[in-house]
Length: 492
Ligand code: SF4
Image (cartoon, rainbow, N blue to C red; front, side, top):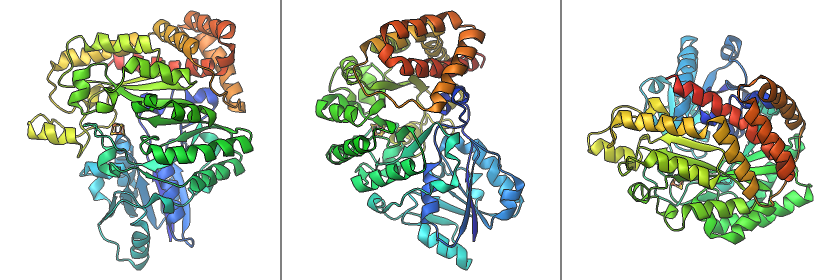
């Protein structure tokens, strides 16, 4: 059997980093870990090819080669997935769709011959056998959440690693918290399941063996969801990094209760974690209560961020507007919080009701749902009737972006952040970083209309924060991505 694995294209959003990647000579942020893991579970005698549309084109000859085409993706990849699914169907190919996108139950995606809902580990063997015998069913739904200690190493031979800016490793699935808007807990459950330290080290070994150096993203939605397991992993991880002379810099996503555990923060620093994404969401306590994000109410938000930064971890923040309890001044309060916390990379989104979440169920019961979510939390993604006047909400959202991604404001915030960043670990400098600096000096320092702010920031970084200079360059380049996207949002 010849299987073609297809990963759809991401649209141009804050998370795509499409305007930053060319500086490093990269095409996408990370490889499709889910499909690479699926590939490792398929029968050994199957022939496999993978096309990631974020780094290469899907040719007709690839489709013609295949007996079956597997697609996987997230809701935000829906438009690309639907287009390529229709194309494969027109060419008479048998198609399979899996991944979080299936939770949306989209009519166009239901046109696939076979749908795999939920995590693939318990299903893939049966699906492969059924496909070989020509008796595959239209739907495969996992009966129980798989034991991730049996997940194999991802099949990295299928992707050109050099086209990605970072590699991905997954330690856990699931999160113990109850945020109303979150689909992670609906898909992966509230009891975090973790891999063993041996599995994680084996994945790092594989990356190192393949010559990878630089960033590795621990892709867990909440890396510290199971603190006991993460504290068992970290000493092994620290030892592995020491033994191999720290070939990677790590980053991840975590819940804000990270700030309640300085032992854990110290271990993350020692393991060379350099950045952590935190779902801060809002400084408005009533809105946090509404969305049952109680873990963000236990400690002062600003103090929490500052403590994490003091451990040398760059905080990347997720923020949301559009909660029912958001007061009229929520936009100013978000801007002020982001400014005071000095979070350069602040991902501000509009609340959106993802399928099957508690939010989606509540809004449906209240008759306030308007359409399916696009999964990108931007202007076009408001899919319910908000309590606040819709135009006021959209204007306020635009104003936050225009303010925080005004180049002067952004570089001031990035400078303030570098000033308060503790002595963390240095990231290894790789060739693409040198390339990125050259391109940044040229494109941002000479050609951009914000070059004055750029030079001021860079010079300040050399003079005052020399130790963090490579982070300063990365932040300048990331800033470019956000400036471009904000300009595009302005014109909508
Ligand atoms: S902490 Fe994050 S992953 Fe966990 S439920 Fe809340 S939003 Fe979801």
